[in-house]
Length: 411
Ligand SMILES: [Mg+2]
Image 1 (tube, helix red, strand yellow):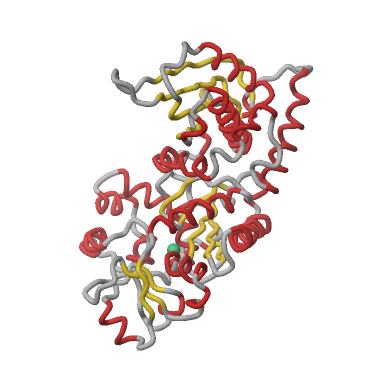
Image 2 (cartoon, rainbow, N blue to C red; image 1 turned 90 degrees about the horizontal axis):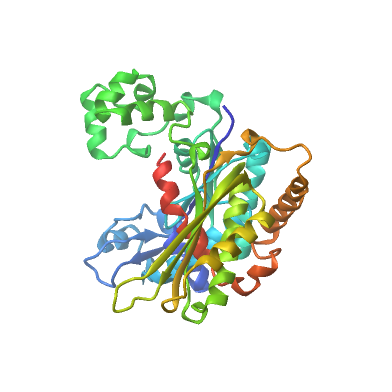
């Protein structure tokens, strides 16, 4: 099985952000506290503090005992969220982010030649460098690459800080034997106890346990999924079973007029089409939805959809969006939120195409466009209609598609 997943986990994220923004804290043992009080615990510890055994959950008094010179700072959540969005944008300048799993973890689905080890490792290095260049030079990350997301996350935990670890199919399951049961994603304290009761105390025992033993531990299909995930299989529906690709965006107050809203919609459409092509799909439908500012009557919204022969060509999607936009009745007020969804997806390879279809030449254009945008940032090349909305829907876009993807693959 090839390498299907790349996982990025920022090291000591909150503490590193503080050190990024306050250079005087760099290289020092640092604890981030929810409030400045002696009775609280660290919610994060810097890489330097971890060397003293201080980690998330260490009480302040104990941290002081472990390291006399420790510095404490109060957490600044809104700044961490802002940096989180910038990190996603940096990763997306290299390859699409498939799912955001937490404020400092994200997974990318490797496609095509990215599944070859040399290419995957090069991509991992490129991502780490993009985070340094675009967000901050002390923001280290650990990258894991593996046949599925579960194992990629496991790999990202194997080397910290600044790791890059590949778990190859042929190394399974022995490569996992050195880990503790509780170090595996999905094995919390309660599950560990259940496994113990079934005679499983080590990862080796877990890996060699029978499928129905795991079924019993998990109380159902979850155990079979775990059995498969340990073996490198992609259990959750891969993007091949994806049914739609969409993006939506809440408009800033100055962009709530129809012209600006339409410009943002074009940006969202182009981004969705790029993702569609990246995953090797064609869409047979385009949905448009508009949410208006609240009125006395409630929350007005308008939804419509168009169908067409499946393709993945931005130049052909533009007029469909324009037509849908024209169909809407007069706006009941300022437009608060806009969204597009590409539906009725089919794999590109399954679309029968007319050999002499004149639109095929667009494919070259689209793929050139995607490569340039991936390389130099999503706004480098765009179609005229999106000009106005450029930059209006920045990292939000990347973040908003995530919940839907997480449902598909929690591995
Ligand atoms: Mg982390």
